[in-house]
Image (tube, rainbow, N blue to C red; front, side, top):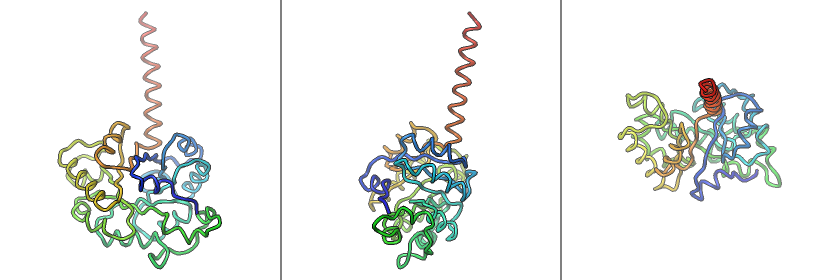
Length: 261
């Protein structure tokens, strides 16, 4: 198996920027993969992706120097093993609230004796060169529980102490809902910023990374300054909409200005 370059960059303490694929299309994935991201995540939870479209996106991105990740729909062994077999080098798992749930996630992601992952790396095995995939997969796969609730915040130390957990990924929208706030990404509430500090401090103490989903490049850079290392910016459909709206509004503004002369 080739080296997981995202894992290497994270261990070196570098800022890592992540793209996000909600659109189930190989061409859009290929375009995103050319844009300089360190990693690109196929979202099977809230995107309109499924397993087959994930494989198509991975195939489209294979020739580019990005690490393919997947956000799975739930902490369930079948889908976690399947996305890893399909070529994911990391699993982002929603709603991990306890150490027991984190242990389950790790067990589903790793081969014995460290876990219970079933053998059958139908695509991932193709990455093997001189060394078989199964011999190195446990060392290369990133296992990333999402922290999205007050319960998870309360249990953060126990979650991070689970052997095999690589880091965490914060979902600001669900976190807000859990706290009785509106769901949104780039949060400014003092209570949330204090939570972010608690989470990043706990990760840093253990030599693990913290990731977070952001709505804008400016907030993503701010998140890195706060201690987050893996920073996602919006998603493909959101970035497409932003660029399209800017083009349309720019046109209408210029046409209006010309018409007034």
